[in-house]
Length: 264
Length: 348
Image 1 (tube, each protein chain N blue to C red):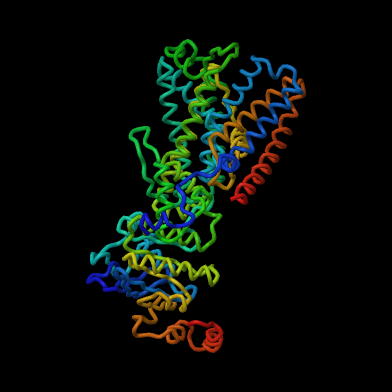
Image 2 (image 1 turned 30 degrees about the horizontal axis):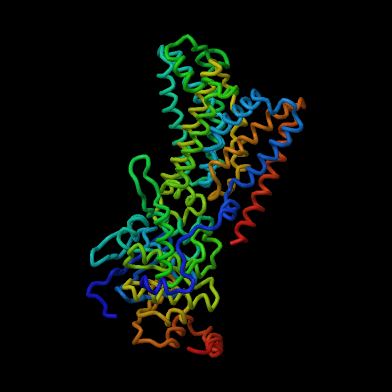
């Protein structure tokens, strides 16, 4: 896991203002190939604003954003995708009523034939979906089923496999484990690690320090739109991370919770 | 995972599609096909003249005039939007065509061409207003509906002094335009109007677009989850605007049919038809919230409409009952569709 010389994405003092509200201020962050950068923070800390900047949904208005060392400003999700940044959203990753294979290729559909006969290459789409999922270790019975019939964890996994298949260099995951149970969270984290091992730089947004510490290489803590702390894995323990994340008063409750959680 | 490892997996299968029965059950139009058969059998028994060849032609004609509009309206509904202005837009299209031909030129094709531009412009206006303001399509197209209703009456009176247009039957090109939009031919003793061909062609093209093109994939996506679609790079605004333009194009075809089959156009026509198109699409299995449905379903919905409206006449009942039947059918079809969809998803 040797970090490349230039980070895939580098944020330097990035900020964002919505009207009179400063949603994000002075954020530094770097994402390297084969590494997982975790962004931690409570609800309202500015995690989703940060994601929207990296995903190209909203442009930043302060600081600099560098992709492959080149200063840039993302104007649309399409632009971010073209630069190799794929984002998987917690709740809006998929179109529930569409078959798995149509979801898999949505926005990047392969076609065959020319002129008015130019059409979706449906056979290849089905086959590629199945094999790409299988490569990530997901064995679906039927790629024709509506993706809404899959469990939340499976849907996240399909979205991750999709990003890997389309050659994303950076994978941004918005709270991938937030709505999931313990077992499903474990499955999703496994695929996050698989994406990392495939050489992708991963941004993992979460409010769960346990999940972050299981896979993360770098940790950035957000509080009310500003950076509260930044650590590398070597420089911080899970206890320390949890303490910083929770703040003083809630700490006793949390320690209690931690003690009942075996295997950490 | 290598190919060898893939083969070694115990449950390795080729990409086979699910069995035919389950695929049929999963189709959106299944409910409407069952409904259409039931309506057909009902009137075949209840109405003496229903099975006569001449009646068949009449039923198909009624179905086609609704179907030409129900198909693009269904696509729009799959894309997650409504168009309440679709009914009066047909009239607008006919009026513009007629008035431009009558006032400025001697050739009806010039009027038809101008009408096509105007009608498409209204569709694009709907789409752009919707995607720029982000207001619900119900409000936007209700506004267009009311404005067009007023314009149809107001401008027609202003130009001609009466509520209907002047005859253009003596103009150049009327014959060829009539052949394209309002002719009839006979197949095996059954008189078929050319609108039936327009209808079937539109269903075929719309089905191809929905199931086999990128645009079709985008239509399902913007209706099913517009935010997710945008996040993976689908041009949501362009897709919705194109769908409104599609409705407008079909409104132009319908409008030219009106004009060239009756020669004169009543400026107050079309009000209320927009709901009939929506009803046909919903009976055909389109989900009113978007993201699900088919063009074939909308066509079958239009066929049910045609059979019911003419079947009641052949059964010699009071036509007042028609609306009641339509309402009951809408409720039944929606319930049946919801039930079928639930079963189809549970069976997986």
